[in-house]
Length: 293
Image 1 (cartoon, rainbow, N blue to C red):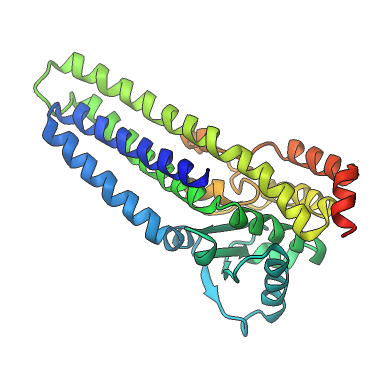
Image 2 (cartoon, rainbow, N blue to C red; image 1 turned 90 degrees about the vertical axis):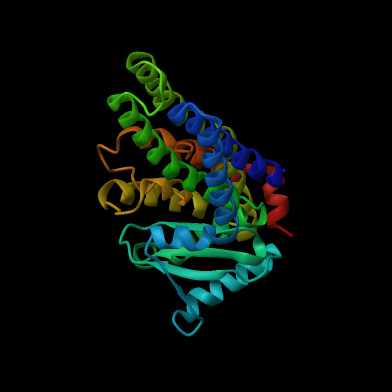
């Protein structure tokens, strides 16, 4: 299923860039150039998506000797989840947050901000780590990383289209008709990307919450962590590319104003919904049976 999601995500971006090329140049040559651009982007996103995201967060990869307790915690939880040991990274942001990236469990990265290591209790940090391992277990990371890159690409596309509409386009059609067509593209492109992301990514957060609760055995600790991280996100701003915001366990731009149309790309379910589901899970006989094993 995750491979199908990746294929749909890549196909959507390829189609979007190809249509844009044709709209801007009114020629099959322009569409072909943009198709090749999409192919290069898809290739790069598959092989180097983790590096791109870590660069967006200015994160650095650490070794066991740099943070032995953190390393030991990740190692213990990943063994419980039946996963290979992921790369561990730390981002310098003071807002408490975390995310996972990478193309598959064998090439996964779990990244923590400096804030989450300093401001969150140990049991809640374990629950957050288990959530990120849930993403890895279900192979959500590549889908989310591609979606983040697409959000950035759509921002560039929308800007190109707006300027094309203002300047009357590049092709040989009349200025008014071409401008209207480009403006339509500027509206449709972000909406199309938003629909793709909403359809694919929002359920992944719920799934990772449940799996993370099963890995850690502490759904209420994860619920408490989400509540705490959401509150901090409104109080402590994070300087990060908005395109990468959806990868974090809670929206790092929750307290930021004026992010414009990029707000459309928020794929996080509401924290209240996530907490309600975790509390219901903790009270369910099914989870009690799992926790008792």
